[in-house]
Length: 229
Ligand code: URA
Image (cartoon, rainbow, N blue to C red; front, side, top):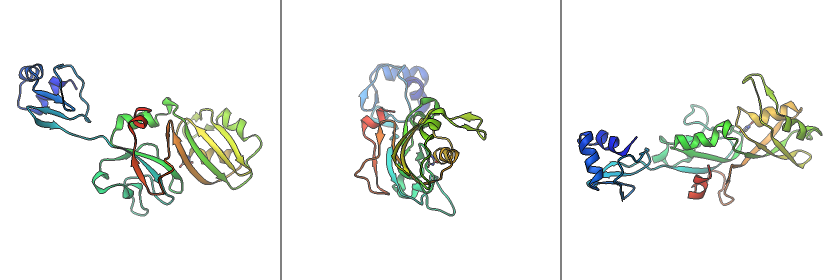
């Protein structure tokens, strides 16, 4: 929303007086005087009129080292959820940018910025997500080629984007996918006659799980990590 319209909506001023208030330097956005009434205002900037706060909503971007056993959900009658690992004051605000299955571990991102998290998860953005996978059976000889070809999933009527499989051992691999379909990695391994026994997400785009975080630990993303998405 434009700054003048924002002032009009959030104060007693008419539209004309709002424009005048902006032009005369009575309005600050993130503590800087702004005299351009056309500036676009989103919900995460601090706006004041004559020093009175009209809006103050902080954006939160958090990386969590998800432990096994926690559901990627806001609430559940049966299982603990990742929200229970978040500070109580933020629990009602945050949503998850790219879920992990209950048994899966590793990088989980939580935020209250819906536009940003959409960029993180939209399949069209082709953001690489890297997983470390252990399997029940030896990984088939043609697995690299099959992952690169993509798999047709009839439920969604789509073919997965080419994925990379890097063999780390007979039953261990690093897999990079560019979308996040339901149980995608497990379903891909099922197609090559195997079963995933553990799944750990190492990174999403340029955001890598911080080695300093123990399972259940979390920290705020850095400015550079936020800007990388
Ligand atoms: N693919 C899966 O099968 N499970 C996850 O948790 C993430 C990707």
